[in-house]
Image (cartoon, rainbow, N blue to C red; front, side, top):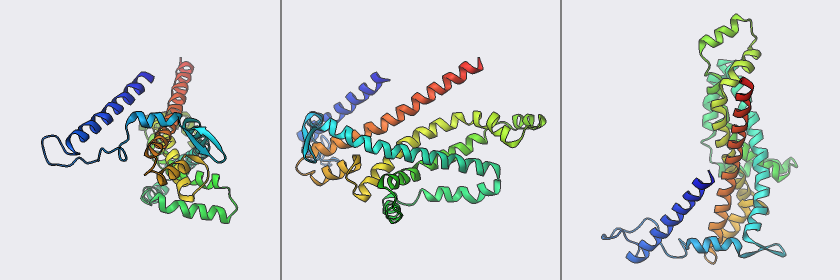
Length: 280
């Protein structure tokens, strides 16, 4: 897995530098034509990969102190991770609860599922200030408000995938449970939840990465002084002077998203391994 990730990074760097070299040789035009390239290749728009990577060991101001960029981003990522983790678990609970309710009562599914889908069409950048303002009026910490924004993105894939997974058992298996006089709750825990495992973990992976996105958007929206969202906002304001720093902060955010994705993948492998051991 690490070898694949390293190979992917090398490929991206080669494509980046190759595109930049071609653009600088042709005046930002497709070779042999007068068609302009989609993205300019000047150092402001596309800094060299070595300059971006070198920024991770450069010093940046953090309040009254100075830190290497890598440690600075790691410090910011820790705050964002906390917000994303709370949002992930909130979204997990809400999503699973909605799936169970919709499974139990079909009228709830017909009435609620369309609105769950519609909820994801609301622009998060417009919703975030509303949630933060409501939280501050009710004396809630900004961390919780940002976590609610992350949960808003997180609950949707969990609810939809969990519902599909809970409905996945064959009708014959459900009838067999009924013939044993199993209650609805017993059928849920003994049949439907194990059958939904194949649907839940992919949803958890999507939800985990979305929780990071929601946390960063929330940080940018409220102008918090912590988190990767704040770092991205600050470096975006100084992009004309230090474009490499903005790219470095975006890479840090991507690394955090990949990290939480990897944690869920690891949890899935551990859970599947224990399940197989228990079955044998």
